[in-house]
Image 1 (cartoon, rainbow, N blue to C red):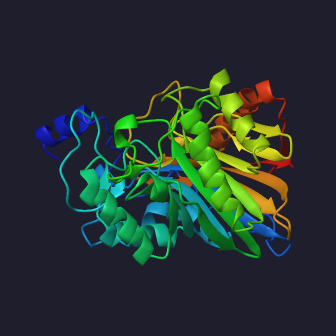
Image 2: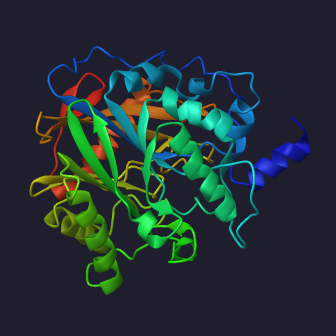
Amino acid sequence: MTVGRRRLLATAGTAIAGGCLTSPRRRSALDTDRYDHEDGTVVGFVGDVMLGRNLDECYGDGGRDPASVWSGVRPRLESLDGVFCNLECTLSTRGERFPDRAYYFRADPAWAVPALDGANVRFAALANNHLLDFGEPALRDTLAALDDGGIAHAGAGETATDARRPALVTVGDVDVAVVSFADHYAEYAATADRSGTAYLECDPENPDTRAAVDDALERASERDPDLLVASLHWGPNWVEYPDDRYREFGRWLIDRGVDLVHGHSAHVVQGVERYGEGVILHDAGDFVDDYVVKPELRNDRSFLYEVRLGDDGNLEQLRLVPVVIDDYAVHAATDADASWLHETMRERSAPFDTSYERDGDDLLLSL
């Protein structure tokens, strides 16, 4: 690697951790035999999946299996009935950069869609602050690529009505409806005559917010789902605890009939809250990316959140499986990674009176 290349990557906010090779210090794979899935449906939820920049360069040259980005975590992902993620990049090879953005994330769909398929991704949330990084043509390419790959999506579209349209995903024996919203950027919002994302302010007193949520949830209820999920790209980066406005908004959504709030955006894991009949994953953190690791926040460490559902879609159990990002791939956590994640999640869930049991390296929460 040239000196110029190192400087370029440093200014772009990336970290070089040994190229595209799997680190030998990582465990080879997650345990897929911790429990069987015959008793109910199990859906995996993960945070930000960013396949652009260095990952695109690493895996998009045609010389590597796209699914190797999941490393030893892949068997665990495949064992689930489906995986839901936030797609933190656009899938395209064209478009012009949106003005005045610090970071631009784009991946070639030729490898990125097979990679998502290799992770058993059945749904991708698109309402976020990167889907319009390369303008409307790249957004349209993303929609087409996911459609061609059979991956459901919500949160973006040709108009605001399209962007608010819920996705219906059948996983196991359960029909899951998902709505997707983001509270940044307002400039990326879809309108009546412009492609974009499903933008809203996380304030239930805001009439535009109420209208957007009412529209999405009404259309979702028409599909008579067993489980209703709201996937939200909300709040600022690098925040370990959500502030009151986001706590209140998540609870308001549960009161409106949402069963599970799938939060992401902070780039770090936040706590889990049981509220009423629902569950709020305040932030699932980063699942895979090329970002610089902040030592005090360890944004390279997160969880695979496995939600066990009954036959009627009722929430029965949440299992938190520790993972870590290294060498442009997601890996099973080491003992040190897992120990840090256990302690951190207990601390960040304490304000919600959420406590966990241990099952090997995993944390368990009965619902």
